[in-house]
Image (cartoon, rainbow, N blue to C red; front, side):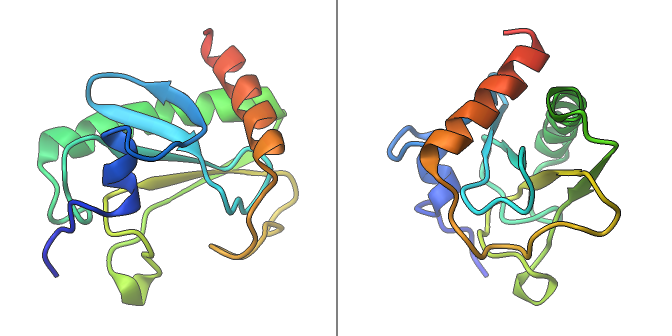
Length: 140
């Protein structure tokens, strides 16, 4: 599959469609998942085009991992989550639904208890409140 430069995440990077931002730097963007698996579910993407882990430049993957680690720490602090799951899917068969490399940061409050992937949309006001908590935990 060829990378689609008009996928939803690429459009977010270009500012063509909104997202509830948590963190942004020159190389990465972190934002709230609109169909969260738990309260605080955040996505981290590299800004450079890449369909999956195999098709993305190693430098961009490294930048995304650095941001994922930083965001995961903030999510854990912001929500007092005893655990955090970090997932990343490669290909439709593996469960990838947006074909731009991304990492899911999912706080876990009870072992094995989180909602299914890509099911129910969250209230935008709730997402913004969650993002504010994470931004505060990030220090800004």
